[in-house]
Amino acid sequence: MRIYPKFLGNPYKSILLGVAGLFFMASPASAQTYLSGTYNCEKLEVAGKVQPCNAPSIELNSDGSYQVLAERGTYEIVAGRWLVLSSNKNHGRARLDGSNEIVFKFISGGKKSRIVYRQKYERPSGWVSG
Image (tube, rainbow, N blue to C red; front, side, top):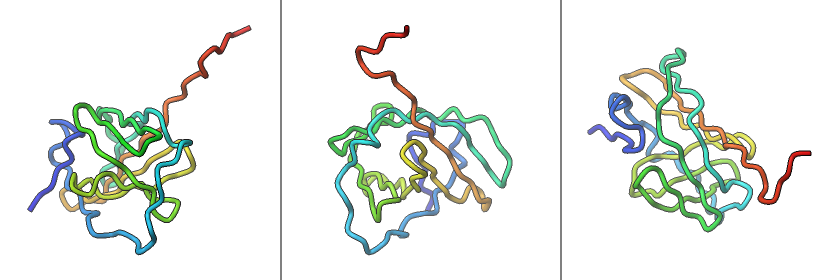
């Protein structure tokens, strides 16, 4: 059975997620405010080769919800370093690299693959250059 992430769009239908069932026994933590924001796809690697990444952005909210295009769900932080999107969406989990990068690893056509999302920097409200 193939499970494709909806948010990757048509160009990436060949990507097969193979990370289901790899959860730690640690209790999930609630959403983290420092993670809230927009994450843009920075890089897609398939078998070590970088390809253009046109996947839509992921919006993480401080209330534990996320949005990718029209898809909405919840997320949890597990063991302080894993981001788990709603389990019923079959996205698997992603590794948190610091507070500004999310890395999904999976198998695509038998090849190791990964997608790297980086948090978009947003200036604080009221910021004035000078």
